[in-house]
Length: 94
Image (tube, rainbow, N blue to C red; front, side):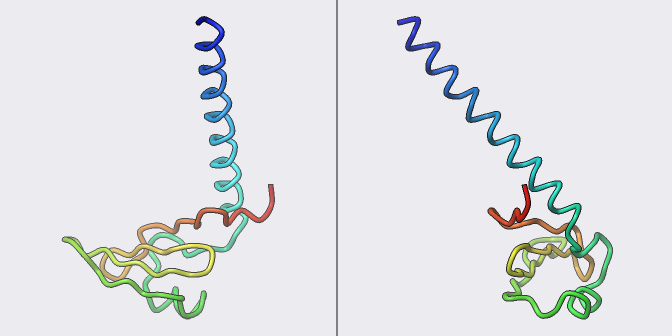
């Protein structure tokens, strides 16, 4: 019984460590990529980064909309960038 519990705990510990490494890699990759920064307006983002693959309409109050590019999504409040998020698997270098 003790061995089963120990094996179970080790399995979850390993999964948590590997997930942390992936998140750190994605953050480091995002720092090296040129992505839309907070505060840019939609016109500037489209001019600098091109037309997005998809533009999702605004929802809620304040209105939050998003634009999807190949490897990331940009979230806007009204006309300004709130944040940019890499898509899962967008890490190029490890």
